[in-house]
Figure 1 (cartoon, rainbow, N blue to C red):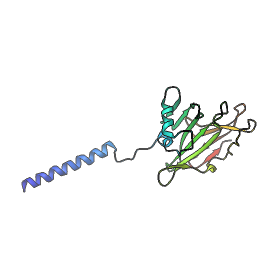
Figure 2 (spheres, rainbow, N blue to C red):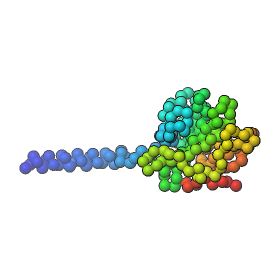
Figure 3 (cartoon, rainbow, N blue to C red):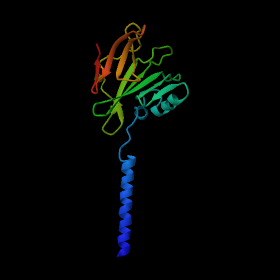
Figure 4 (tube, rainbow, N blue to C red):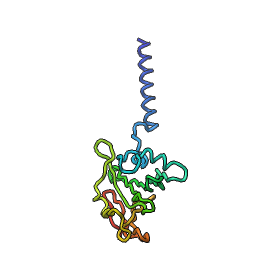
Length: 185
């Protein structure tokens, strides 16, 4: 009887220590994904290569910026893949909205003329988000330098700039409010 009590005390002590260790280490909380994690999940066909391959390019010396603290990625491109920028915004409920901005792809063409948005679907996969979140019409292709615009995603903050392709003058600024982008005056 004494040995069974001792055995139960040891088991109970181990359970208490084990559960306390989980709480102290925070292992019961799910990891919050970063801009790099979401970028690796972008559907194939969005860019010339898949997100995981492009992350290796971003991480190579002098090719890109990976700023996971501010939710920002950028890359100068590599020939087939035009330069691109990526920014992570969040809905008010914490869901991600990933903006992916890239050039036309023609050599010497303007950078960052195409802007797409992605969000998680019910199965945890990235899918295109409605363009209605951002109230600027997409550029027509081929690019007309007199009427076209390009985008500058924020490395810090929540404001996207829309600039003229010819001259680079800021046309409009749009700030993310947790539901959609609102034009600044």
